[in-house]
Image 1 (tube, rainbow, N blue to C red):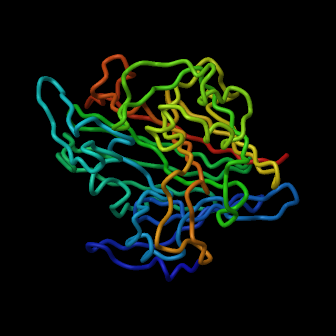
Image 2: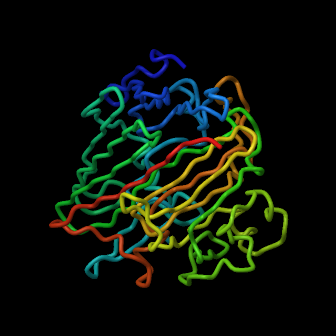
Amino acid sequence: MYKKDFETTIKGQKVGLFTIANMHGLTAKFTNYGQRLVSLMVPDGHGVFDDVVLGYSTLEDYLKTDQKYYGAVIGRYANRIAGGRFTLDDREYELATNYGGNHMHGGEQGFESVVWKVDKISRNELNFSRMSRHMEEGYPGNVIVQVNYILTDTNELRIQYTAQTDQKTVINLTHHSYFNLRGAKMGSINEHLLIINADFYTPINANMIPTGILESVVATPFDFTEPKRIGKDLGQYHEQLKFGGGYDHNFVLDQQVKSEDGLIVAAKVIEPDSGRTMEVFTNEPGIQFYSGSSISSSILGKGGKAYRNGEAFCLETQHFPNSPNQSNFPSTVLQPDEKYESTCVYKFSTI
């Protein structure tokens, strides 16, 4: 992966490749096109480093692939909004319907498809910002968004989102890396062990929209309260697995289980062969678990690897899908006198 392969100009804005690292050798590379994490080098139990996120070696490949969300920031609204419509103060707003008649991940030209300003870069810290203009992709309000990444010396990739608006709007940001803790070129993630700190999840209908109820995970394939192989229940018949094409569901986090710094303990993934582990912490009420059922692409990935379905997973900390249309879900409304703040931490270690 070469810096020159990411240097270009898009709509008059310069695009490049930016690198941060910590004292232990963990290295993260980002492009400011879509604020993508294009590489994350993490050691295994023997100290051997490998890249644990799927992606591409050149900006050109990111521009032409149908897998447009690899490693990107997602906004203004992560996940789905039913029918591409929501109402604020008796006014209905109409958004792009870019997924089965619904709005998904910010629309046709969401945050993944724009160039971000690089405000700060140091050895281990990188800060992006941009103004999302009023009615961009149909959303009201001029919204100033900042996203800060820190690769700490305790092997955490800390992501801090902030946003402010000049009029009432909705917002729900997340990070969309596709992880494989064996390494991005190492095949299936079905043997990864997963724990999700959630006793409930939000079932979906056949159109991938939450039904509005919170359903217990007990005695279902969605019970990850104890370590379980990701692939263990994928083969069984369950209507929700059918609707999602595998796991592509929001889990309701137990907000009583906190880390030392007060964040919710959301999830943990253990890859037995390499010994790599990844813990996820957040202040968000939900986490979307996606088991990578639709990641095949005609574009070869890093190192000439042809990525296949089931070779990566996503754990996206966020508010619930379709919250603007579900009064019983936690609100995603942002007022002009408020500040949106969201935190996601991916912490790496070995066993």
